[in-house]
Image 1 (cartoon, one colour):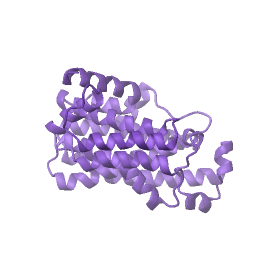
Image 2: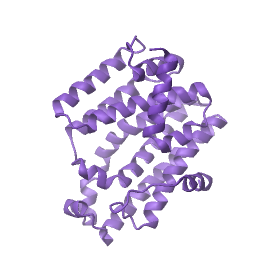
Image 3: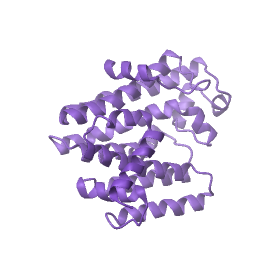
Length: 277
């Protein structure tokens, strides 16, 4: 498989699986856009393995293969489109190997556990599955001040993952997982039986408003990254951050009923959300 063919395939994966993300990266110049789609496709693979229906041992084995593939980069991935594209991306851009390994570690966390006692525990999970994506992408974007950009990029990843967690409560429950911290469920008087039944109570709204406030604080801090990026990279980040902010606003407007209908923005809603950021 040629590098060109590999990039075409990871581009198709990104457009099919990550419509919100694809809106932003469409604004990047071609080489950066292709590298970011390679990163997304690898992250998607890890996530799909972790969420798959295979026994835990089989999922761990496949994630170990992903880890070995990262260790072997740039290497010769022998026809695997995702790895061919990723190998090219790590040659072209200073993508830290450790952040790719963190993605795999996050996948392993999903195999090993389904509850988090506190925000501090959950934050480490979010750092692996989303903060790492922010760091990897920022290595592709480039920055006026890489040292200052890295923590901001990681924080922005945490913000978007926090919004994902809020949006996907029902879907995650179906997978047997609860990403809302256990101590906060108890603090606000929300039980797992409430989650199972999709009860939108005053207690649930208070809990979710607490989650929203955390997301907003992380988002404000993470968006300071924009000042350190070139114009097109900043527009890219602004686009998908705006869409996620729009999802947060939509959840709030619906009284945090994320059970009856999964939050989602129309094309017009995405444009409006980005413009409002």
